Length: 283
Image (cartoon, rainbow, N blue to C red; front, side, top):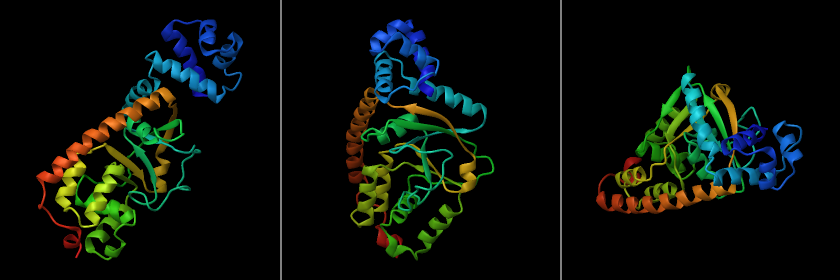
């Protein structure tokens, strides 16, 4: 398991002997020795203790490995991506548990940063973030940006505007998504869903919604939409998220939410009355 090697790294970075680390963790010298030499399985409670201790000492393994993995992927002309899983996943990845009512329908969803993937699972019981490399060569890539097309795509695939399924605009979006191996698009969180919902309900215009959404930018997600895309996705590392680290991401999430809320309020005021309502766009 990945942790066996990292126990030794912790000791070397902190200049600790096996006996000293064993005393800190609350296990025997023999146990630490067996862990490092992969002769015994480490219990979940001990994994948590080890990673919490490392994090408290300023050893942020996940951010360190994110940089290392990024450099390795860059050399191989691949894209480093992360999947924050609320349930453990098995390899190779498949569409077996994919849901139709996601942002772009069925698919395997990944983010560009470890922090984004960690924030996604920070309020869940999950402890794991999966790191992958994606070779995009010869894949059909379709991109979305924070605009009306993206808003309508999310609203449609989440089943909020089925009454407009025969619209020429919606038909074009569906064809764009269905023909892609990979979708690259802004990440939408719960606050964004609320804003898009207001646009769908006719409360705000597309321009108000666009600028409010742009204020809450969370980066991009990569959605693998085809078997061809999955075949070019390689699992490279399992990252453990300790409680101490999760608390940090929860804190950042709250701070970002408060900041974004004020940005949204300003954007809605600034662009009031500008743009079109959804029934005007899709009539």
